[in-house]
Length: 141
Length: 114
Ligand SMILES: Nc1ncnc2c1ncn2[C@@H]1O[C@H](COP(=O)(O)OP(=O)(O)OP(=O)(O)O)[C@@H](O)[C@H]1O
Ligand SMILES: [Mg+2]
Image 1 (tube, helix red, strand yellow):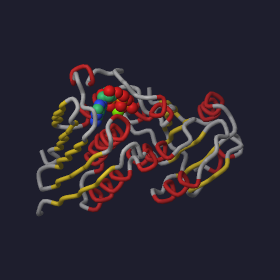
Image 2 (tube, protein in one colour; image 1 turned 45 degrees about the vertical axis):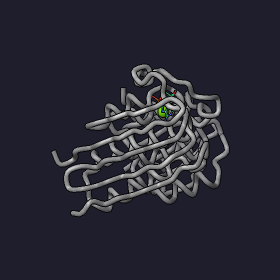
Image 3 (cartoon, rainbow over the protein chains, first blue to last red; image 1 turned 60 degrees about the horizontal axis):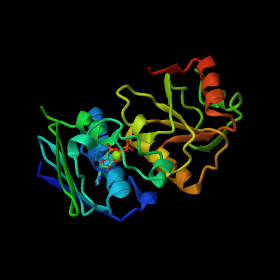
């Protein structure tokens, strides 16, 4: 199988569309016949990260690369960045606004959940420049 | 076999999307926090929530939840119904509180995850 690439742009603060990209990614993974448990873990991770991009940053770009061994999602935003990644990774740590809470998010559980559901999670962040998450599932091994 | 149809009357529930011939799931989970729902490790094919917006349906889609039950008679929007239909999710709403709904479902044999 050749590497399949998917790409999505998310608008700033547009909660009404939060999840559209993750939904399309899920449909593509299903079409490829990938195991349902693998798909669920991966799309839960991508969805958490997609919501974060809308909730905490100014939208951004999601790219997904699928080949025979792995599914890799790169979510890059040009938001405020994360000053202390270790702190952000702690369960319960959140800076979510009231609006975000009203959407059912802001429990500080997203990043730890991505970590739990992925085989590899890389977070790169520069304050004032943005954040990039790279989430990988080695689904064949 | 007991189906979703059998739950509509005790819950005084309204069906917004999907078909009520589906079997009642074995397990259910209730929460208004979507990030809580997304951390579930076991399958809970039914979600009871007070969160009446598209994110509750999106969360159901991502977490392989088949039935979403909106509590407290909150308005179910067209956008929620469209999304539920697109993803074959059964969407129902009940005027009762989350607590009362969970009590009724428990009496009807639905099991908790934890
Ligand atoms: N893309 C991002 N840009 C800037 N800050 C972020 C980003 N993602 C996460 N953060 C910061 O890390 C914190 C923790 O994120 P996490 O996803 O774990 O929880 P949350 O989004 O606040 O709540 P939940 O995910 O449970 O709905 C956020 O509150 C925010 O301060
Ligand atoms: Mg989050």
